[in-house]
Length: 307
Image 1 (cartoon, rainbow, N blue to C red):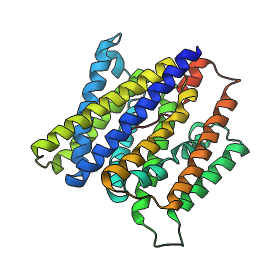
Image 2: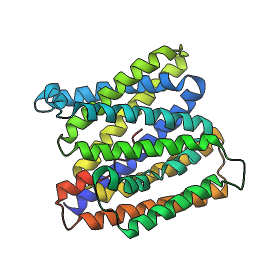
Image 3: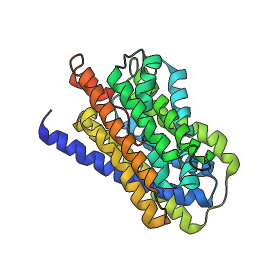
Image 4: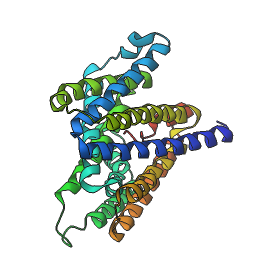
């Protein structure tokens, strides 16, 4: 792969993080005014429409995209991601964008910790050390014992665990299904799940908020398109570290738009978590490099900004 393609992939990933951070800010605003389940449901309607339109343009059309050998696994992945998105949007309202993303940044560490029991992969002492350091960073953010513990902090932590499990199940599904098939089921299963749940919480939207909802849906489509393009032109291991920029952009939007403030312990803890996560990604790439080809390394990358 050429250096030019890698640079393009990095810029596409940076653009992806900007779009997803903007999406998070709009989600935070709408979820503070309306029911979280309804907001996520409408997002998923547009996401499913995008997935179906994308599948229709591929060879074999929708039938090929839906042809999975493991339907229960694919449906389970879609449901899990939808629930994780609900938890994240709820966390935006409860904690704000900055603190939520600081805690959620632990998900690559959870992926590494669970890759052994879920996928049967070997995790060496270096990555276990990074995982332990990362969770020290989470403790710095939460400060248990030094202040009254916020139960709301468990919401983004549960979202991080859910997304980590989703990422591992995606890698497991890739052993039998193509990425196009998994992407199709992610959108459609998630939309069906959110419709069954969210329709009971429908609230009328103000005309102005329909405009924001439209922007939210467009950012979801644009963000996933940019993400797909980033992985098409560069290996996941090369662009994945830049996914952490979403934490930076989301925090900046939280401070400027919503008046959020970040305590020093959150900044320090987030820095520790991100450093441990970057080391884990680097070490995973080093371990995988001798035994896999370029296409395998591309597929092995953890999916970023699921939002």
